[in-house]
Amino acid sequence: MDHHRDLREALLEAIRLKELQRTGWVRAGVEAPESVAAHSWGVAWLVLVLCPRHIDLERALAMAVLHDLAEVRTGDLTPHCGVPPDQKSTAERRALRGMLGGLPQASQLYGLWAEYEDRGSIEARFVRACDKLDMALQAARYGEQGLDLQEFVDSALAELDDPMMRMLAGG
Figure 1: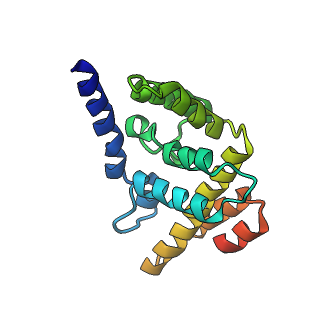
Figure 2: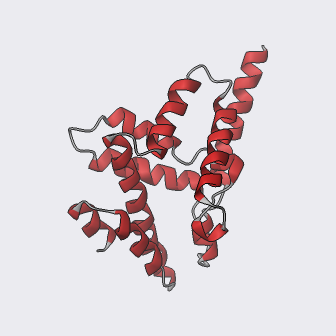
């Protein structure tokens, strides 16, 4: 019984990602900005559609779903928040360990998340590129509100090497 209650609590905490607005869009004045969960869906969609044959799709999709999960506890910290990258990383690692702790596959899920964070595989680097591409595409979408969001496109382009992804991002 306690196990089911713990599992339910872990599931309820994770779905709070749907309620957390993306900090960058809020800062830029976007009306009705997407949630972090909506962004994670966008990354997963790009992974599904753009995944090359030499990349393990299942691992990449799992990373896409997991990549921002710790933000339920830490918040969506951007470079504009003033939190040093090492402190952000430590906080996110601690948060995710705590969130996954009671799940039977906690070790596997944490390992996939850490691999993404460390850019430790071709899948992780591909998902990171999809993360940046999603931001650029979302900036184009929000640009329809009349906002100048070129900084988000430029930020994505600075990290995208693949010519097709650069073109899709608007570069």
